[in-house]
Length: 381
Ligand SMILES: Cc1cc2nc3c(=O)[nH]c(=O)nc-3n(C[C@H](O)[C@H](O)[C@H](O)COP(=O)(O)OP(=O)(O)OC[C@H]3O[C@@H](n4cnc5c(N)ncnc54)[C@H](O)[C@@H]3O)c2cc1C
Image (tube, rainbow, N blue to C red; front, side, top):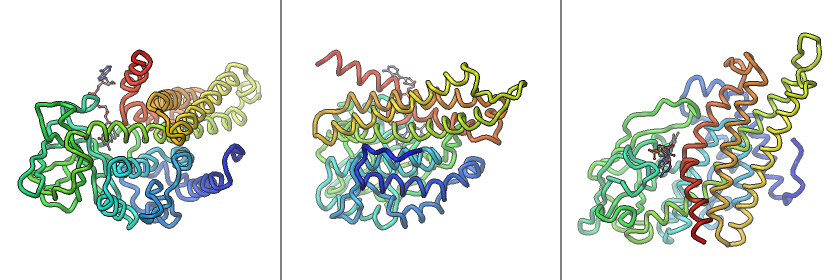
């Protein structure tokens, strides 16, 4: 793939760094990670050495402080290599967004300090009975003197088995639904923080997804992010920031599937000895796949341009997430189809890409929820 000349020299440089990293460290082992399904811990050391581990942490706190455009460029490259790895790194970034939104100076120093010193972060909002409907959160936080006491069970918490610090959402006023939700910083080492079952998943198998149990976990009063009852606002702003990044990851997955399908269509011969790509039915499918990849990328750029300009971008972020992740699902399925039995075999990477693509339509708000967000803005403005 050519470098995108609409990018600044710095953006191109980081994009190329991530692309080279992906080719060297990720693509050679992506299939193996998927089969073993174990967390890809060893590679994180290399990510840290490359300076790409906590991209959102501002320079004054020891991070590279990369713009959201650069974060999205890197996420696309990670997605191209392995969506599980991209999810781990993306989740790390996402976990730090609440600090940018609502963190005090001391909270930022604490949280970002963990990340720049090599720790990982987690974001625990979802519960067994509170997924799309975060207002049903059953985890509680009660103030006792100078401490908050947290109790409850979170689930599907990415990287939390390995994270050293986690943003946890809990209800400080259970009768109030979403208005009673608050956000807290919880260090993993606190007594009562317990990692429960580990999820075995269809795709992104080497990302770590766990149950997080909180049993009388005591944290200082100062670990509340923002004010009591602002949890939902913080979560929604965090997801606005994260959705273009997930969309970029999905663009990467789709781009890889397209590249695999194009290569196959050029090399694989039909019964008459002609490459199957010479058939218009295959060529047109490739054309549609390529168009979807490019359209998805441009929707991401559009959302991030608005974000960087400081204007509302919730609708555009949701549109980018919906379109890119639906496109990733279609494009990966089309790649499997073009490659026939080779595509369906675990010898080819496209079956993994198809399994990995599915989760992007589900996490960070399902694509049904994205459509609720988009239509809500259309109908109420
Ligand atoms: C691999 C993985 C990693 C994850 N990592 C994290 C993480 O790190 N932190 C975290 O907090 N969460 C995480 N999640 C959870 C994820 O954000 C939720 O799965 C997601 O928000 C959807 O919630 P749910 O699965 O409970 O589905 P539900 O909310 O139960 O929804 C079930 C179905 O109903 C649909 N639906 C629900 N409400 C409506 C409605 N009003 N209108 C139309 N359709 C509706 C949904 O779209 C979906 O199709 C992760 C999930 C996965 C699969």
